[in-house]
Image 1 (spheres, rainbow, N blue to C red):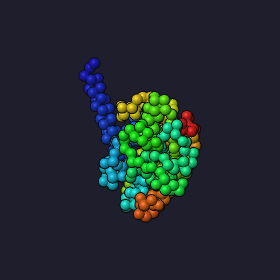
Image 2: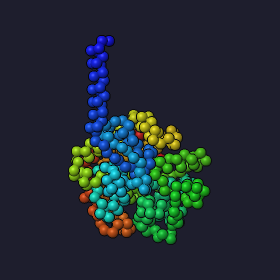
Image 3: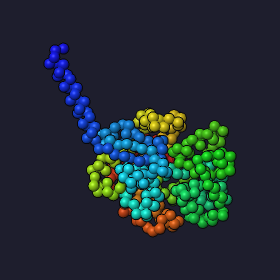
Image 4: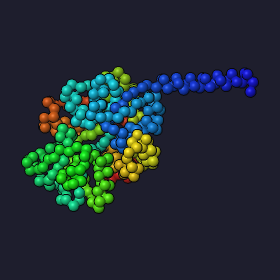
Length: 342
């Protein structure tokens, strides 16, 4: 190799390296705060990053776990996050306190918050069947709000049902001290069902939506300032995110999705995670629906419930803060493997 050729090669490598760095530098850096820890419930968020959806839009997104101390709404208000995930009750409470937020998309079309109970116990066919039962709730949590709404709807007085505060310890449920236990259907629900199956016990799930209570779960939010000042960035982010969710909910992508989530959550067994993904698919992408579609009726119902129970001081008219037009990831194919949750 002569000197001229060597210099040409070095120049080419230098330009290529510089171009790569420049391209990376041109990407807009964004912080995205999840509602909770990395698990299958954030599979679309994780996969949007893993499969390059954000990069394809020219974005460099840091997807970060959430916690009670680091929730998306606080992070947005403090300027530490550009986008985040929050449930409707969190959004509505924040609006009641004067927060400047907008909702861009609704990830879960069916709320994963449900209750599990053994199938050797009386089946809950109607809300009146809750009377006299030992029901677990997280005091201060949205499951408490949902359960109290159901009891009111059935004209069941609090003294007619045994409400028990629960934590992350499932021992009271395993020992049958609390017979109806709140779970996220696509995560804890799968784990508890499997553990009880090993003991020869079957389970059923009590879904509030079956009784007309549609309390909205995880949704994508940003600040009014972000939407006003950088609408194109908002559009790019949401496009990438919903593409990630759509791909993650596609059965054909299952192995890649599970591998991506496994890198972030090494503690969940592969078989459990696969079942969790199947349930998540049915909650996020029902047989008829759109990835990210905002159910305005359900949001208004959520607000009405919270106002009736004194969770907010006054009506916030949440429909004014819903930006349905940004959720443009239209359904092109019927989702596979959907149906009645079992």
